[in-house]
Image (cartoon, rainbow, N blue to C red):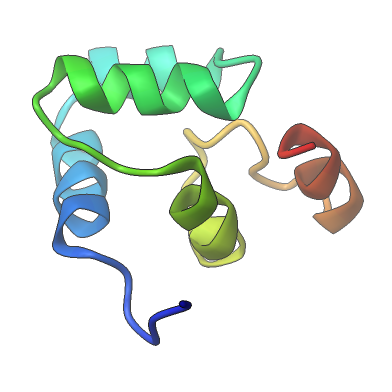
Amino acid sequence: ASRMNPSSSLIDFCKLLDKDKNLQAQVKSAKSPMQIIEIAALSGIEISIEELRLWSKEMTAAYFPWSEMGSKWRQDFFR
């Protein structure tokens, strides 16, 4: 079931990313959603690929791999 708000985990992950340049670089170079999930997990934050995909269009920070790549690229990234 889709929720209208992102989970607290996803929000925590974004807050953490905002503060951590090293994590930003890891996320930016991720080649798959799974790599981003693993980066979160290593920081002790559990998020799902489904939720990452669902909210990715709202996640516009420059350190996300899909930043400024357009929706087609972003959809392909999550395939």
